[in-house]
Length: 309
Image 1 (spheres, rainbow, N blue to C red):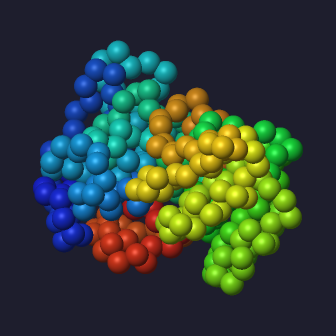
Image 2 (cartoon, rainbow, N blue to C red; image 1 turned 180 degrees about the vertical axis):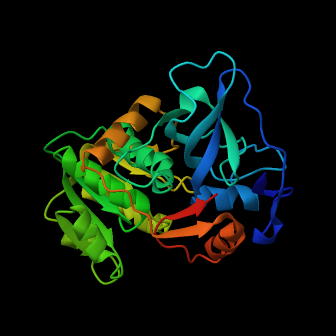
C-alpha cells in the first residue's frame, strides 16, 4: 500500500510517499481503509522532533482519521467490517496518512452520517481538545462567561460552538481575517486583538480564560487579571507555562488532549443533529502531504486540511 512516512526527524523533506507493507490487525485492533486523515500542528512538531512524543521510526503521521472497517483482529466486538468510523489514534503509533491503518478497537466510533466520510477526519482531536479545555479543565457551567484568546483557529471554532450550546457567554479575540468566522460561530462579543486593548474592552471579569494562541508570556500573565477570583486559566499552548494567580485562587491548567470514546461519540451526535459544524478548508491528496508540512513549517496553514487517501 501507499503511505507517507518519515524515517528520521527533520524538515518537511524527510517525508516520503512510498510503498509500505499493509498492516494486519492484532487482537483488539481493527484495520481501516482510510478515507482521509487530518493534518494537525502536532504532526509538524513530531516530524520536526520538537514535540516530545515517543514515535517509532519510520512513522506515518495523521492521528485523526476516518475510514471504513475492512478487517477485525481477534476478540473485537461492537464493530463490523464495512462500518464507517472515525478515530483519534494513539499519537505514538502509525497514523492515517496511508491507504490502510490499524487502530485499537476502543478508539473508533461511528462516523457522522450528515457529512462526507473524508471530512469527518477533521473532527476528533480538535473537538475533543475544545471540550476538555472548556468543561474538564475549565469546569465551565451554564450562565458563566469565557474569554477565548485566539478564537480564529479550528479549536476556537469548536470551543465557541460548544460553549454557546452549554449556555456560556462567549467573548472571543480574533484578527481581522477571522472576525467574521468567529462571529458566525456564535461569539457574543468579538475583540480585534490587533488594535484593541483586551482588558479595556471587557465589560467585567470572566470565569475562564481559554488561550489558544502563541502570545507573549508577559501578555499572557497580564491577561489573568480578566479572570474572577476562583476562576481558571486554561491553555493549549503546552510549549509555555500557563499562568494563574494563587493569591486570588485562579487555577492554571494546560490541555493535553486525551482520547475519550464516549465524548467523541457525543460530538458525532452533535454533528448529526446540526448542533456542531465541522470545518474543512482544504482537501488534498496523500501525495501533497509533504507540501502541507512545508506550509506549516513556514507558519502559513489556515483552517483545517484533510488528506485524502
